[in-house]
Length: 389
Image 1 (cartoon, rainbow, N blue to C red):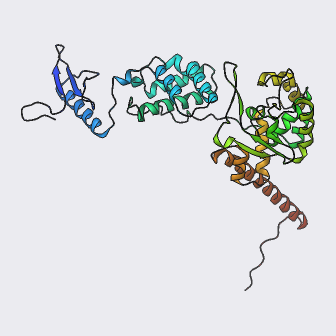
Image 2: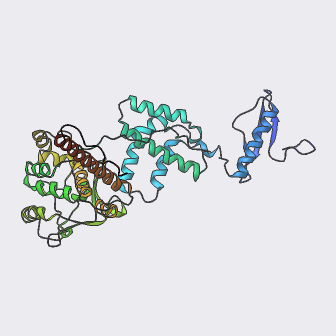
Image 3: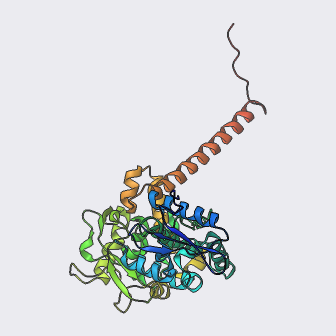
C-alpha cells in the first residue's frame, strides 16, 4: 500500500539492472528480508508485498530463511525432542527416517517440499518393493514432522502431505485360531518351556514384549491373575531394553482362565527360579527371549506347517485371545482394560467382528427355519394370515 508520495507503508521495491523488480520487507521481528524471487513488473512486486503483509497480520506468514533447514536435520531433531516417545517408537521412527525418507527427501529444504515431491517419493518407495504397510508408516511419520513445521515452527504455510489414502496400511485380516488349535500349537512346541507361553499369551491377550517381560511376582495363581508392568523391547540394533508398556492402559491386571493354571504351575515349578524377580519365560540358555531365538528353539515354523497354519504370526495369538474375549459378550470397557488400550478403536473392531459373526449365525438359523417350514408345508411357505373383516 503506497502513500501520497509514492512510497509504500510496508516494504519497498527496487528495480534491478536486469529490469526485474526485487522486494524487501520487515518480518514480525523487525528484521528486513529480501524476497525469494524477482518480478517482471512493479505491479507484480507490489501485489507480492501486499500478500506478505496480509500473511504477517493473520499469522500465516512463514520465514523463508527458516524454511531452508534440510528435512533430514529437522526430522532427526523432531524425533529427539518429541516428548513422551517410548524407546521402541524412537527406534521405529529413526529406522523409517534413515531407511525410507532421508535417502530421497533428507537433503531437501523443508520450505521447498511440495505435494508432488512427496507423491513421487511414495510412488518410488512402492515401486522399489517397500510394502504398503511400511510406506504408510513412513508417510505418517513425515506428515507428523511437517505438521510441527507448519503449526509450531512456521516453516511452511501448509502441510504438503495431502495424498489421499497414503496413510492407510490396508493390512489383511489376521487368522483366528480355535481353542483346540491353540492347545495343539502349545503341545507341538519343540521345547516344553514354551507351552505355557503360548497358552498365556493367547488367553490373557498379551503382546510378545509383555509376556516375555513377566516376572514370577507378576503371576498370582491363587487369584488367577497376571500383572503387566513392563515390556521387553528389541531395538533394530539388536539391543534389548525393559521399558514401560505400549500405552498408559498397558499397565494392567488380567484374569487367567482356570483351565491353563495347571500349565502355569508346571512351568513355574520346572523352569522358573523361586524368587520374586525371576523372569518367567527365558530361552534354553537362560537369556532373555528374542523373536528369532524363540522361533528356532520352539521350531515354530515346523509346528505351523504340521498344522497347516503357515504364515501365522505370534501376535495372532493375542488377536485370537481378543476375539474370544469379544465373543464372550464382554463390554467395550472390559475389552479395553483386558487388551491394554487407551482408545475405543481396537476394542470396537473386535466387537464389530463379533456382531457380524452373530448376524451370520442368525441368517443361517433363518435359512434353516425357512427350509424346514417349506418342507413341512409341501414346498411352499404359508402366506400371511387372512385379515379379519
